[in-house]
Image (tube, rainbow, N blue to C red; front, side, top):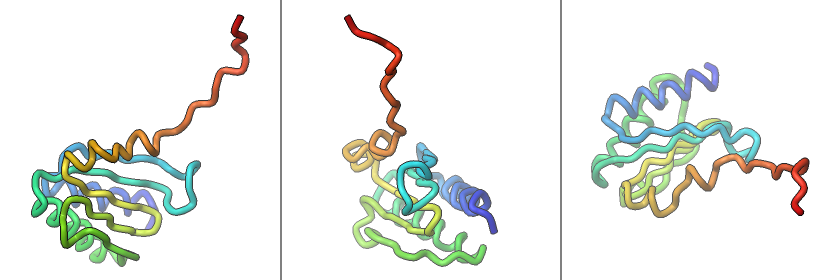
Length: 117
């Protein structure tokens, strides 16, 4: 199964369980730990845990076993490591605090053609 299929399985699982603000980040040029990060919010710690359960279940049905799951007991931030795809599921306040979308945003190179002065 391809990376794109796994990514779609995760997104479908999140949409089916009513995840909010699903964001997909291509991090291939920034790290070797994964190709894609998917970030989504849940409305409560129970909802965040339910989102994680859904992602894990759908991935397993497709033949993928998570390498690790962290934070499932607390439910404020659950990370599901599917090797090429890492899924971050968070409460909105946690997501706002850590702002992973900004942290993993591509850095733009300075315009070297522009001369100040």
